[in-house]
Image: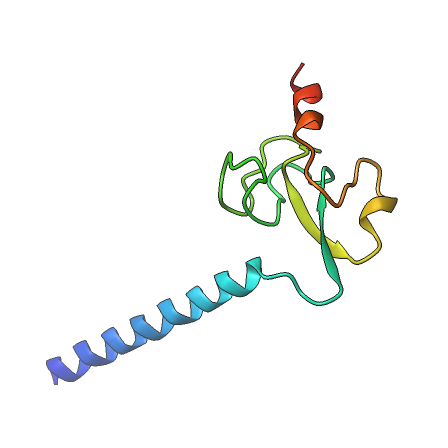
Length: 98
């Protein structure tokens, strides 16, 4: 009986890890009809790693509007947003730092 419980626990753990891994992968994938929009992200709300390689995870933006941070928005929306850019411009982050 103990062996069966152990195997069931291990199997449940493996299923949970697999499910979480697939959710993390899909969270970083861009959906159809969306584009990366740089420079409009609120602190802690970025979509994934920073373009300047300062971090590699979602939710780690430390300031609002950092040029290296991006968020997925519907296609055609980004350039309508104040500060929005379809490309990362390192010079924009340097201006904010000074």
